[in-house]
Length: 127
Length: 375
Image (cartoon, rainbow over all chains, first blue to last red; front, side):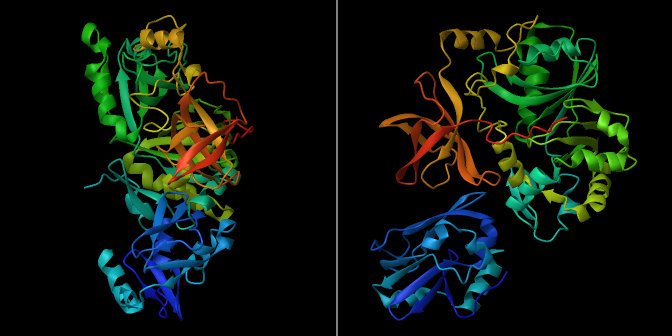
């Protein structure tokens, strides 16, 4: 199980990578491992306005369905369409596979995210 | 505190094993390679399952056969020694107490294999609460021997080859739904039956709890180099689902009759003796069976999960009992319990409410997957 040092994390196991005004969002290695074989990703619509904490994606593994929440508020500007045909990419390369990207509406929300060290500590606590 | 099987310490040692609470039991949902790899191993090669959580209830006495025949819907009177039979155990109202495997050890000794989550309920029903126990004086002895037995399933198209190699050609003589008690497995005395819950050829081994770890290790050590995998409950569920084998609590329950679950083949109205639930089920058959268990394949993408509502146009006609993405067929499939007699045929479109959206599905032929190579 790995934690990418360059990313920020939420308590719901999303990772966030900020490029300018846009935040790319995926799920952590821990999350994909917990979910098991991912078979389907229900992607959000482009231009949807979402608030921090909203359920925006549904990930289905063989075992169960799991929601992905918006780590910050904003407008969906990009979705990873390739996941429609190859959802297992998330299992194979969780940190190289973003699920959606959003344009930040309140950059200060980024301060609430954990850095890699804090996320690692959080994972230890959860165990 | 969750219950553990005699194999707990063995599989706990595997890297990547994931344990879950399954009806009060701490059991592996998957091992390192994951559910899809385990599923495919069982379809193409073979896999080993710990199913020791299943319950074993022994019925003994001169009237054992007659007694079990009253308890279940299938015809026990026609069984010979060494035969297994699938049967439903119903209440007087036709609701299902449990679905069972019945083993006839002798004319006076019947082994009933029950679902893990139902063992206590079944034992009370069988040993005291059913109508036969209220009225008959010559009662058989009923004992819950679940703690004594471990159960290991070895399933897959290559299962017979491996077992013949390991335990001798005599294994090959066990035909489908029969069992033997005279073949030692890893030197241990046990029951080997040619049954299973995956839709593949395979065996189930009942052994003393103390012998389970040796047997498990022996089989896996001898076969793992040929790709045999230890498998968890996740693969067991996707495998049984593809083969449309019902799972209690999903396709069967206190409120779903065997006729609604399309299991009328296992309900022998014409057997010579009465059975519990017969009059209620007959009445249901005459009046019209309200619901039907059908299979469907998603047209739109999405996983139909248990409890999701099923629609025909604007009308709600039922719900999903089980659903998953089929690893073998690579499509999203569901079992749905829907109103009977509305003229829906294979290929007809229905809708399933997944999240906030209604998604299209088509009724599909079941079982979704069928292995024709059974013994």
